[in-house]
Length: 478
Image 1 (cartoon, rainbow, N blue to C red):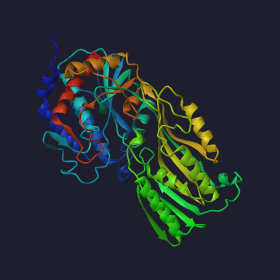
Image 2: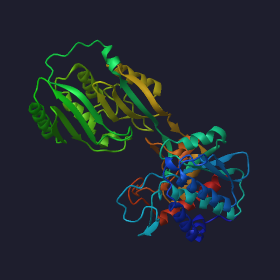
Image 3: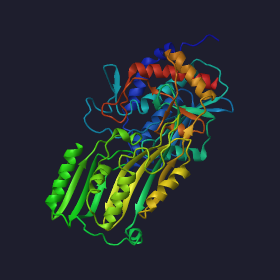
Image 4: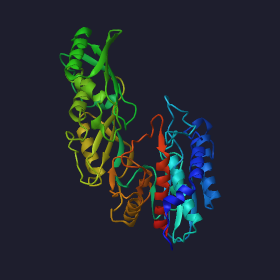
């Protein structure tokens, strides 16, 4: 058979690809509980986007199935083995400040601008059109190819979890929802809470503190475990020190450290505000944690017994401890990198619970049971108990697996560039597969506009990715 010029075949369908992608992006597929119903568990807009994707596939000649509105799939080809392509039709809320309407999908300076353009509706349509090319060329396949469309990737992944309760697990596959050349490994990802109730603190039997400067009434920092808190507020009741002395000490601390914050007096209480720098929790060292920085100041005051235990543990084990060194859980891995620890949410109430919510990402070479036991033991000193909110185990595909080597070869043949492989601290749909990787669509050197205002994909990149996906689908399924 004559070799296929995949890029030329894509360019023949360029106008249809662009128009269909724009139509897809014009559907506002944001989680909307108010319009949820039996066959649309995440709302009407997401239901419409799922129907649109399935409709494009059905028109191309694929057989489709709707799995109760949680997910859907479209399949073609024949054979026992199944190649899976996982993507999602939901998007994050658009937010403010766009230079063009977020669901207009206008093309500006060669960029298609819309919420979902790069994450993940643009690459989803690129992959569907890639399959259309393979089908329209009548190329013989020995395996089935199945698109699996999720509807809840941006929140809780109920979509793929529900889908795989009843549907076949692909032999291997990829998600077009990350970076080129190829992501073959993802760290384990955990959301943990360390909780101390008032009763559990009292069970420690700690005597009343002497020479107390102030009582810690409350502290609040952060909203999400996977983000570094950029704001923190603590309320103190002056005892041995008056309000002005506490305020002066705090101002001096801010000046000495270069941190930003302010002090207020309210009804005889002192309220301390701290500002930090928020970044994604996968790399907390790049941010400034307002919560632990505020606690670091509180450590300089003589606090009441419960407040003292709270700030002592946090300052010792969490302040600037991005890799868990002081806890004794630090672990670096040549392939996946270091274990990272982000203290995303801190809550303290003198009459209720004290709480640290942590996001920890760890490489495959250290067991969850090992480091989590150490973490629990350290905080048990203050009568804190460990609660696991979510745990995704590390995911890794052998770099010599045919899935990896085939996609590497395809990328190199299509771009002329070496296809290195990448390990990340984030999570992609690749880990939903027993053997799955993330493959594009973001090319090396391109800024990532996902979740930002004016999210976009270059039209040329959309076309280029489609050609890569077309060859990839054929090579994996031929």
